[in-house]
Length: 170
Image (cartoon, rainbow, N blue to C red; front, side, top):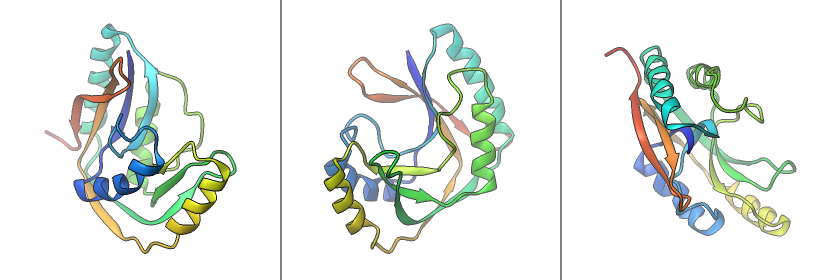
């Protein structure tokens, strides 16, 4: 089965992202707005228990932290993705590093750029139009992150939460 590790932001931030994703993201109906900590990878049912144990240990070793987003950005010219840029923080980068140090899945394809996708698979013209409009928005979202999720993909492409991990000592 395909699994991954994500952070789901607050409903307020998800609602904001979805107001654009429903128009510009073909995966809108398959997964809620999220920050990817570990890109999707194949895992056997036997490995899931091991992965879960490792993620539980990682969660215990990290405290809740804040994320902030103040602007819209893009990965153009690498690809036509428009996203909410999450301001880098040492806590988020350390969590990402610890999760990606696990011996499961492939190493990250790109450097970690924390973000929430608003639009993807856009044509060049669409990308230019969408980005030029959205980058003018005045944004200021700050929120506390106290958990992350191991998610899995169903046969129909929809992603569901397999397990949730709370940050900090229990």
